[in-house]
Length: 226
Image (tube, rainbow, N blue to C red; front, side):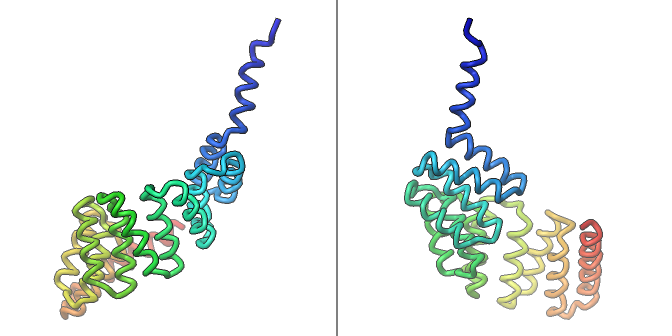
């Protein structure tokens, strides 16, 4: 009589050799912050299927987390060669370029990501951050506006728009954005700090001190939980 489990064992054996298996296990390891283990699995997936765009993309994500931005960009390049219509690959490649402070190149990737997916809020936001770093504050504000239009309740976008407005000397508008950021996230220490900074420019010194005090309390609380 045949062993009824032999067929199952054979299936499992084939599964372990399957690129999808290693890719999926790599994704789980990445989620557990085991980036080196994830990369090892993505390597195996790619060995099995050298045209597996998702495996290159995911390996790029793990390399990015380890600070290997050049390695990440190389993997995103390959993912894009295989699948040139994947907005996420352009977006993540742009983010890796921005981490290397190559903001102009990052803009090009964000542009393509947005062209593929015009509702890609994160791409507008990060394009705005790159424009901010290039001191194009008006361009940054335009991108933050678009991100807010798509996803209205993200504290960091209001906060970043507030910083851009502050740098343009529009302190009252900056404070309005910090107010909204704090409404969405009352524990946002940086928003209190920068609101205090803008209040100082408006000579609202009492208000500034109050905000600085709140930010200090929040910073201290965060440090105590580390």
